[in-house]
Length: 88
Image (cartoon, rainbow, N blue to C red; front, side, top):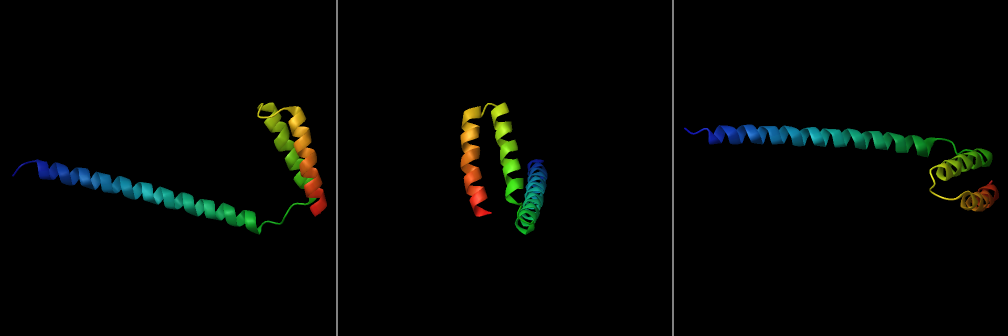
């Protein structure tokens, strides 16, 4: 009997094991993502002042990373402040 069938079975088993490992990792990632989503949905909504502090910090970081200018950040923060504070 030739060695080709043995080599084929070995390669198929390795490929199957790799596929199973990838599927298990993907399932684990999906479960983790679902847990994070549930914690976000079930967490209490922050008050307007806390939201504005977060917006300010995020915009400062964006300016530091040169993703937008300081003037753009100020205008955007003012626009969001109007929306967030009107909801409160």
